[in-house]
Image (cartoon, rainbow, N blue to C red; front, side):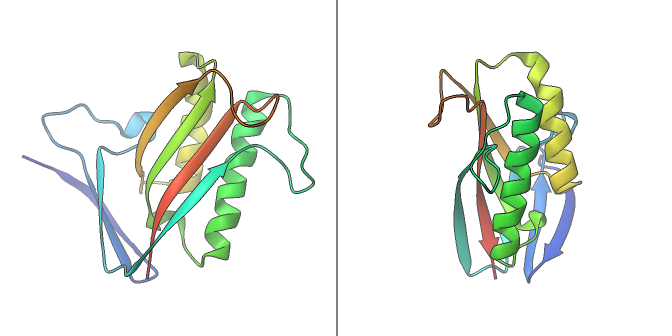
Length: 144
């Protein structure tokens, strides 16, 4: 039996978080098992956002890249006239993933999405598009 944990509404789109009672609670790790969106007539697929600043520089530290990537994602959402609550899914890509990195990523996810945690997949990768790039996040956003 599924358990709907919470619902949020933004921009005419309502999202409901579904975390089945027979599965572990993923919220402490910054995601939901599923998100159901209703009321939206358009979907935006946001390209991977890395830790590059507006002038193209890339911080060296993993934590700084993650923070900048989520800032970049919020900038794209603002340009789309969308709120973080309209994001139904994110994929994160991490170079040389180590479980100690999870806390940094989870903190940024929770700062960005609050209780409206999107479905999420974490993919460890050997490298990303740019030299020195350690983190990237893409998103699916349901628009009105």
